[in-house]
Image 1 (tube, rainbow, N blue to C red):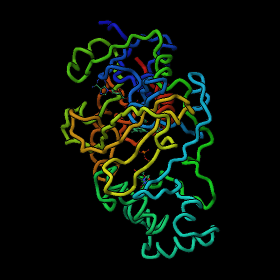
Image 2: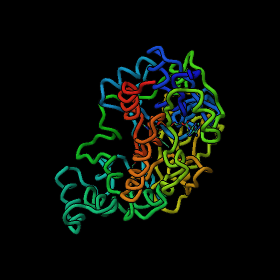
Image 3: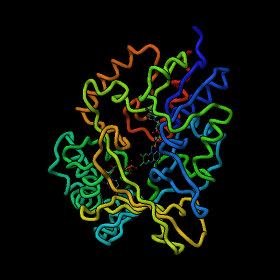
Length: 368
Ligand code: FAD
Ligand code: UDP
């Protein structure tokens, strides 16, 4: 029996929307269904008082991958924004990522040699390979920075003791012995002019999209519509948690309008002590050098994740969860009608540029 569509795509985030665009360009018929009331997944932006608000937290595009940079530039013009967040520890401000300015502010040192000496001294108890995030952090930047800029922030962000977290998480941040405050090492960086949502409007132009539709609520009926399914939701929920729940981290974003033009003078301020209940305040206008009279800020409050009730923003890629994920991967491999992809389908802490690369590569192997 011929089915109505070649592909049913579950989720209108980057992974799903790229698949939809590429497969449509190849002449296949696609239907995209999305649980939320909008396209764009976690990259969705919304215009408020002439400011593009990043509804699901700050999204800064950065990549060294030329293929990805060329690809995304077909859909947006990027401005020259460079992420230079500030750490606020009990009202004291420090430069991020960990660089010569941070070392100067903390220890009043002026040379890389002096900074390296202090870090080596403070990290001397960590012998051999670090076993967790705390050990890795102390080895990389010493105890003072760990105590002031990492411990409280990390414990809040993941609702866990840093001793129980994988060391890879902290390696996302550069440690530099130069006066360079760029948060990323990548060759290309910026914010799309006009926000992210317009990228998804272009990607999905001319493709049938149904919003407010939960695939898992009626899986069989949706499967009957298409030869193949591309699923970008949480892999454990697809299999009805039969091996147990994977762990995710979620966040509450409180968006607040302020009746004055400039709240904190920077797009991203991290609150690194344990007492302040939020991790970051984002001031969206600074992503686009916007000169409006009002401003919009967002507080990020980490919250415990509840499957099916809250949004699974971050996979927790520790050994236990990666092991559980491999069991779901085995089930996925046996599922002949369905391809799994994206941050939730692959259960990996992927940034946007990595998802774009994965989608462009994987879609080439998808057949109806
Ligand atoms: P998603 O964007 O999550 O899209 C999946 C879609 O599937 C969602 O819209 C969801 O509603 C839908 N869906 C799920 N289940 C169902 C179902 N049953 N039925 C129908 N639809 C369903 N990356 C960067 O490069 N730079 C950054 O600065 C950055 N900051 C981030 C900040 C935060 C707070 C978060 C959470 C992520 C950040 N990222 C950043 C990562 C970026 O958001 C992801 O890499 C990207 O959004 C992943 O795209 P995706 O399509 O895999 O997933
Ligand atoms: N981190 C920290 N202090 C900071 C910023 C980051 O301790 O001021 C740690 C924290 O554990 C965080 C990790 O570094 O989870 C990675 O930071 P990143 O900014 O990449 O997190 P994301 O943007 O993914 O939320």
